[in-house]
Image (cartoon, rainbow, N blue to C red):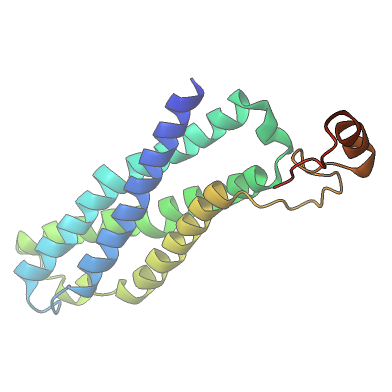
Length: 184
């Protein structure tokens, strides 16, 4: 169960960050809104990436992250896991409000413009806020991955690491073997 949840979490993170990267790449390549057909085609593509890759990936990451917190008892006391949980809430809300919803609306406006509705002025209205949203959500996603890999300790633990030996532990070893213990 633990490995399955970890696999789902990792694959979801790959899909999520990949979708954000694809949205950034498509955003950079957007033609001028006056070229309605090309602009609408790219916007519809961006809406499809948000709908079919970004949203399911984000849901997979959030659900598998919550499930792993429930399955692995050690995560309950790990500061990095709680930091990932908090950043996961930011990712969930940010993705739904600042990426998914604007992409859906832009796709709908692009379809309306292609069907002859003269909304070319409105087609490029949300470009700058989207750009910032992609970068912020992408940075939080990358930070979340870094937390999962690095797993920093946010609370100082003064206990010695398991590989360290104290002088009182070394004395019996030296008495038995005549050599000091090997420490890494």
